[in-house]
Image 1 (cartoon, helix red, strand yellow):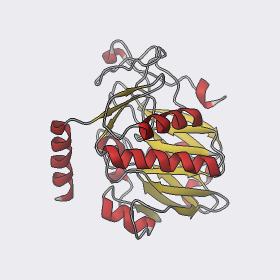
Image 2 (image 1 turned 90 degrees about the vertical axis):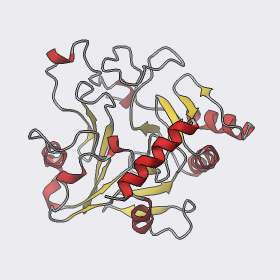
Image 3 (image 1 turned 120 degrees about the horizontal axis):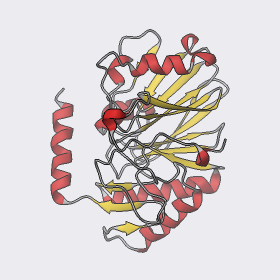
Image 4 (image 1 turned 90 degrees about the horizontal axis):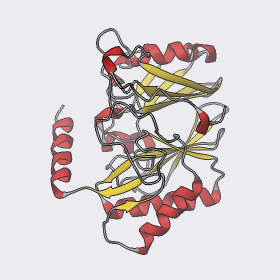
Length: 288
């Protein structure tokens, strides 16, 4: 099945009657799994990616659900990947960015043997990547017979990175680019990041761009409002290289921050109030 044809669970009209599992799981192949959290449990319904190499496993984002009521993202991940000898490999937990709906499941990985959780904080991300001039440069990580390239792409959020999977030719962009309403905190950084990714796809084959959510309907330019728990007409997860190129062309035409509406996504600069709230959350998080 192609990624564009995956019938993701898209919530329910009455979530009190919803009996779908916590995680909607799609095995692309025996070493590549995409997970979506139940929209009735979190309207964000974020996507996580599990990429398995012969020596290491990379978990990208742990979702919006904290480890409570018996749910453990780490336990669930190991269960759905048991066919890949998950237990025998080093596990690296990394995040597309530091917004809370992408790292609430981290605690279930903490303290596990042979597991490294990269805290979603800028200093920790820079330390892990080993880059000396953030956000410039990129780092390639060898998972064993599988390489992934990690690219700093701030703009939506300060710590944002994009992950390129050399095996599947996937560009995993988190909330930097996805079929939804993309809020941009730093407009100039975002312009530079999208331009960087556009240059990257010129040099590397990319089959699909995979983001952190689905918020768009199948009607071009229309998205479901924040908080929606039922999206019966939602669009597919993958975006195309052409979507990226089109966005970059529009961004490079003007330096002015402005709302940009495309068929498959909408880019919206944050307001001053939204930026202030974001900074407060960053301060509170750094104090923990």
